[in-house]
Length: 314
View 1 (tube, one colour):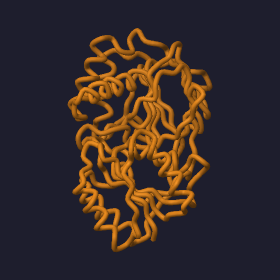
View 2 (spheres, one colour; view 1 turned 90 degrees about the vertical axis):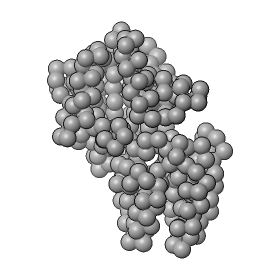
View 3 (cartoon, one colour; view 1 turned 30 degrees about the horizontal axis):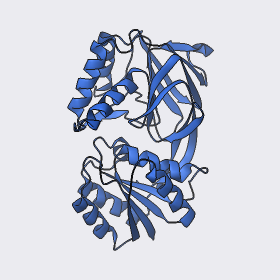
């Protein structure tokens, strides 16, 4: 079996020791080439290169941003169900995609789980989402957000650029700061349309929108945060929207997402399950995040579901 190990050396919990342990553990089962990413976008090139070479598996040691890049390289020229499989060893701060596939948060434990799956030949096909925004397009593995959600991610990124470490506490502080300054309350309206349609075919206006390709949306330490409890890699896209982004309603819905049996509900909540496509149109350029990374500010994002587009080891 031929494999490519893609390592992001600056991911939050990635170290040379973890990389070496992983490579050594895989050596008995996989003829492995290791490449360290050199900067933003390199993972896309490596995913595409792996598909051209016809390797059997691409293993990512890094966070969700690196996973997103490799996914785009693998599926950028079309569904990669018959191409290289993707496996992930957590190396970032949250590692939503790896954990959604069932891997442990510990890189060492996840390596053991990956080896077991490879030896048993376990893999599955999962869906991805495709977003068109401005004159660009990009695939996402597990989520996309527009509005307050993306404002919080942007605030976290600004603090990380100043040397702050990405932690659940940092996300909470940034979220509370955005709410305190009225994030979303006086912001642009976001009109949601979908296929199949929501609310009896009528467009719905929300103050923030979270689109999920699987459950959970994110994690708070070890606690899954289920914005869209029915979301799955085996169905279409799900959406959670809030008609108003007032602090009280956002906190109430957040607590519902953290429950043992999460079910965001109430007059302020808009939900959508198993959509083939979703369009988000804002009244002015609005922050958009994808898989935990800020894309920029856009007035319109068109999303489509692509079933069975990617083969994963899980």
